[in-house]
Image 1 (tube, rainbow over the protein chains, first blue to last red):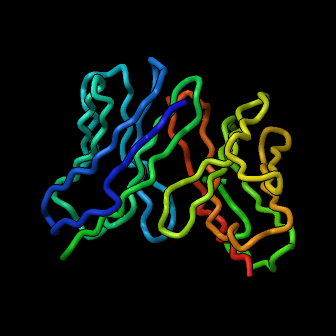
Image 2: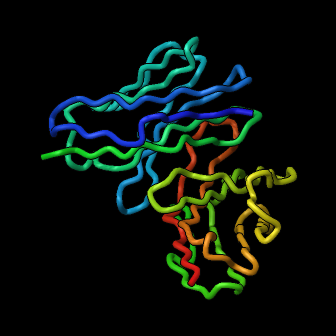
Length: 113
Length: 115
C-alpha cells in the first residue's frame, strides 16, 4: 500500500512572496513518480510539476520547483513570486509501475493581493 | 477529443434513483481512474482500469457503486439507489499507461446532487 500525506489544510501568502507546500509519502516501490496537481475554482485538475524518483535533481517548472528528499520521503512544492492565479487547491500524488495514482488530501492556497 | 470528457457536468437526482456518469478518456490512453471529491475535500479513489487487466475496485464505497469500461475506451460509473451522502464531484482521469511516465489528465467532473 502507498500513502500520501498533506498535513496542512490551508495556507495563505502575499502576492509576489514565496510559499512552500509540504507533502510526505510512503511506498514500497523502488521506481515511482511524484506529482503536484493544481485545482482552481473551475474544478479542472492541472499538472504543475512531476518528479521521477530515480532522478536526484529537483524538478523545476518556471516559478514552481520541488524539494525532493528521497530518504525522508518528502516532496515539497515551492511557488516563487506568487500570483493571484495561483489561488487553488494543490494535491500531491504518487504512482508507481505496480500501483495506482494516489492523492493526498490537498491544501487550499490563498494568494492575497 | 482533445481532452478527457465527462457527462453530464451536473446531475440532480432524487434519493433512491440510479444514475450513470460517463467518461470519455483521451484516445489511446490505457489507464482510467474514477475519483470522488466531496466539497472542498481531497480525492477519494474509487476504481482503476488498466488495459485488459481486471479493474482495481478497492475504492468503491459500497455495492451500490459499479463501473465498467467498454472496449478499453469509454467508462460508465453507475450508482444505484442513490443516497444523499453520494453527493459529490466525480472526477475521471486517464493516462497513457499506469507507470507514471506520463501524467494523468482529468475531466472537469460531474457534480452529483442527491435530493
